[in-house]
Length: 523
Image 1 (cartoon, helix red, strand yellow):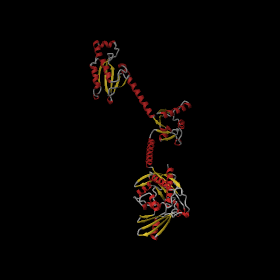
Image 2 (spheres, rainbow, N blue to C red):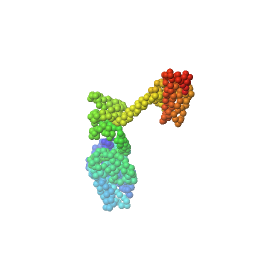
Image 3 (spheres, rainbow, N blue to C red):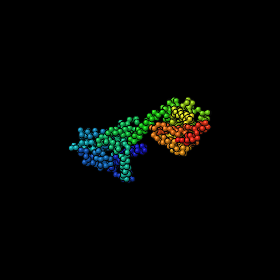
Image 4 (cartoon, rainbow, N blue to C red):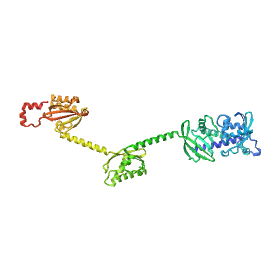
């Protein structure tokens, strides 16, 4: 795209030069197909002469009017002055000398390809200024041109000028001294904005670029405390260079946001207690955090050298930071499995290390085939889980060793725990809620006063403390019960046999038939 714009500018500049020569030679007959006349037979070329009064055009030759009409901009004096500034070094000097001496002549700049031009200024008094533009070489050129060709060239020039002036980029041309010799409309608008609407030649350089700058360089413009960024593309030429400044504000904002986001992620990763390692699609390490070094013991120099996944796992194996396999083939197989599962989906594996630590390794796929591995030390978590399980086992053993049948219910009446005697007495898995057991106890005690008392105790407020009673068990044996409130609205129910199931005859005779029957059915 840059080459196309540069070519367009070069063509436009060349066309302007040719058009100038054509305009100056307008008096030459333009006959299609007519051979050029000899220099001796040529008519005189109409000069380019303009007469200004206080910078307002009052008269001009036909060639001069044609030139002014072809120049871009508004106002005859402004258009002419821009054109002169592009071809003469400091044309203001000619005006000052003419005002002082009456006449002044200024040669065109060789650096700008206009060395053959002459500017003659004459101060005629009463505010009148006569300007004449002369090209001595034109009189001996013998130029003949077709009128249709001239029209086509003018159309092409108009298209090129319109395209360049409407381009959404700043385009300007500099000579070796860094002086701006040409600029497009976008550049002129920026100059007007910085100079409060007044444009003077030579134009200021909006963007300072060193002479040895590369072909592409990012620069900025400070305008009313607002910074604007541009990507400057430089196109060198003969004794000049053309610069195309493409707006880059959106790109700069996006890069700044991305940089801040990466910095935030970096700080977050650095503070994570979990080791992070990200491998690209070629399975080379691209990102890691300090926790990975602390957990694995891998050297920083080794990690910054971007090792492969296999090399990293081999280094971990040498440090005894991976589970020790039975043989090397199984180790390679486990690596292949780890990579495949991590690339296809989430992979979670627990490593029990020879040193006693336990790591959880999680593999997650990322876009473009990358893989992220998380190393988490779960040694304390595993130890806590084991202690918790041991405590639960100990509690179950203690409850099974009790001489009472015990059941614990939560605040909502769900069964939390029972011991072996409770399951033997009332059956295992016969109910899972307090309501279910209430029905079992009601059927066993035949809705006796002892059952009603137990039901009332279980529905009473915890503030009443322990409550006791007795009821008939499933085998009509007398059971004493006790309800103990626990924390969190939980309740513990204990059942103890008041009379053994197989009562000795002496005890049964001592109780008497009526008392035994009453004791059995009491509650």
